[in-house]
Length: 183
Image (cartoon, rainbow, N blue to C red; front, side, top):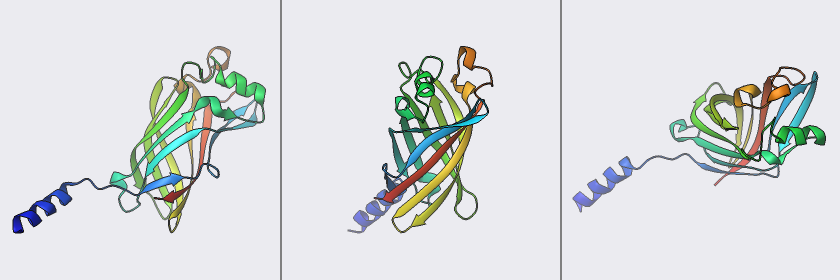
């Protein structure tokens, strides 16, 4: 009996810890971006995306997020721009239908402020991205808001005549507004 208790204790100690799993409320959550286009803000949203999130502020070492975005689901108030953005000079969704972000680490800053670092893959290019965000917890519910700036041409978005910083700026602000419930 004593040996069984020791074995059980060793197995429990060796078992990997895991952060709490969160279920995203896609009806309330938004994932999008904004960029200056002809010196005017152009804002769009991705209508189809999935996120697999495990997060516990007391166990950031085991926190992770894996986000897959369907690029063809991009939509704005400018359908002509949307068509071009999805084409060969933009996202080229026929060859690269998804963007993918996977975290490599989370860091707690102050109060409700955190930093997620990870790898963003877009249009066949993968680069490190830092995402500062705020997290508000209310019991089993969470609200996360954050923005990250990427350079669109680092990912090959904007080929040919669109590779210059005008009329479309290089800096793109990715916006995240997520509502989730702890499982």
